[in-house]
Image (cartoon, one colour):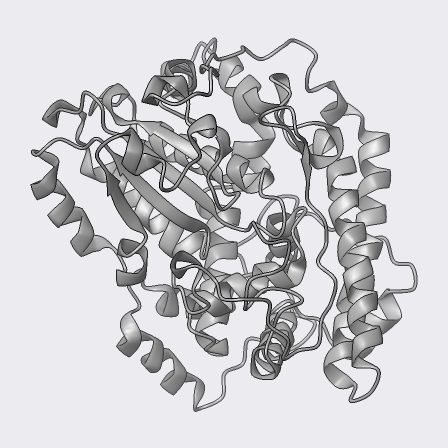
Length: 464
């Protein structure tokens, strides 16, 4: 695997792509209620919490700038998005969000989603997904922030409560709460899906053992919660320059009793609408003949680019085209002796989440760096000189955000199976096979510089 960024990623942008990134940053910060003068002043030392407290989407609040006013031609842009295929109605939702959302909540949701990632990398996902159309990328980005904040409450509920929270819910006297907790844990204990190892491109692999799912055994809410939890956990193990994952559906023993279209539709929506540019390859392994008619239905729901990333493997030899045999688990006929085993949450593993003093200090430190990055970004956008120096400054700040996130992580995110098993280590080190991988920031390059041709599943115009 090359140690350089693929085209359309931080450090490897054409001049036009860099200009599009600057346009999206400008539009995004307008929606966040950030003005150039205000941000440059704030960078000096305001330590406002950079994370959302209680999301207030749906409740109008005072706006510092009239960022929600629309120009006459804006409606034409929205029509353009619809014409291009607004599959999930994000254009209409975008208008509703602008009319009701608190800009600061949206800003905080963005920085929550960024986590250890380079902020440019996050915006570039949306640009690539919308074929470098800035307006459409903005619509998708803001709709995703709303989805994270109020629809799924990704950071304030799913990741904050985690597995220990589900264990507590499973002992709740309220029958509905108890059911949700048990259903969430049941999927983990079964090993319905799990993260382990990497493919030949260095992408983390999410295995899905389809035979372990039966329609109706878990509630729809618990299935959706579990799906988002797995995706978010997979995002944590991405180590640059790798920025996508591989999903391997093990169809061994599949029957019609395992088929359930509702969670499939939800998974597709997640990747296409809320986690753009996250899928590198999808491997459907050992699917029986009865799955062919099902695949024809599912394929019709997929964006063509996503569908092009799906590959069927019939045996070990075909699977080895994508994954080294030494990295294929023994269960699938490979040489990796690793076996899935769920480790239950430990009583004191989340104690640091209650250490409010340290958490507050780390949040304040991150908030300062966030504002410094925003200020440096506005300087980079507005300056015609010293672009390389400004990019170097932004890269240094992005690295501070990365390392700062991993210091903060134990105070915000409940520990997972992968923390307990040692796969995710303190400081963001990922260890699958005894060889740790540490995500590092790419060095800024000249805008037009390119580092090789990407594989087909990494095309710069991908829309997944």
